Length: 470
Image (cartoon, rainbow, N blue to C red):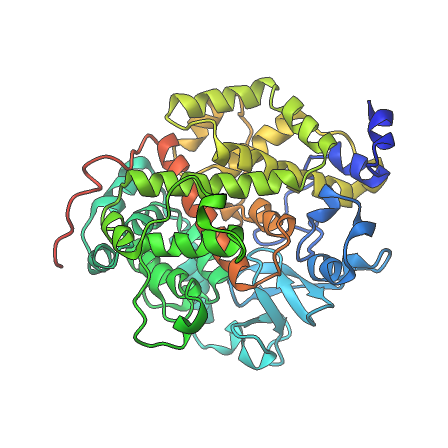
């Protein structure tokens, strides 16, 4: 079958990548350091099509030094001023900046502390901020570890989703209550990672550690929050422009990514585009049938777009691996807990497949071993984990008894690698506006499924009660 496939025009490199999917083994690195990772900006097209067919600029932006075969990658280990973790940083020749392998934040060498990498909060190096130049940096490291290490279970998640606060009231008032409730149910590591992707370091914020304040900042922070990132056109210059609600955010993302100027909305989407007034009405509650349908169709578009970048060998390989016993057990367990076998689950499988294929190939090249079904199901289970105490039991039910996790106090528990790879697969420029927004949207979509796995239903009346003035 491989010979026949090669005759159809698929290169030897693609065949090798299609058959390799396991993350490299070996000793477990300490928190924030993963020496087996290639450390490139994006490395997905290598898994999806022969690299020689790529445009040079795309290759350099996505691969950094890896775009030039045989050139060793320039890297250094230092404290990251974004995530406050000791991490490996890789130099990206195309942008003359560095990339933290733990949180994917843009960094630069700090002239004040050689063992620390400064975070680049703006477009130029003049915006660099060195963590160790602050007198309280050790306190912030301790604060971060304490917030990340808090135990989580379904009871505590329900409490955060239902408790009153000024931030919940503002989210309700401004039509952002649905993403707000999803955000407060996430782990602190996930919220921290989302803030870093949007462009600021939340660890130095006074309210870091309060799920409600963190969530409100992610949604509404001036100039950097999710809502601000979705303002387009002349509205960026108009201080009197109306603030976007949740439907407005989704409309902007959907229109930017999937509705070109020469096409109409109905050419691409089955659900009708909601007007500003309809969006306002549908955004006031945690649950809305129309918004749920819109989100599902948008997630389906992302999933299908990623699948379209995979060649036929990869698609067939994934289909074959989905018949493995443990993956079928995991999918059956998810369905029993209310998770439908739709675009979110398939997106997670494809993303983990591409990541594992990339890692295996970059470690051993042409000598890479074929993937095993157990390796894929472990990656998928970890990717879909909500970091709650019940996850261990769920993994055990699916036959996954030895799922290794990083230390609880590290941002690596957010497991951003498959999603970071997705951005490259979709051809997004690193740290562009949409490359910052889309991961947040996908994480919010995935969180709904994670809540279902924890047997928490967003349609329940306990989450849809009217918010009180606080």
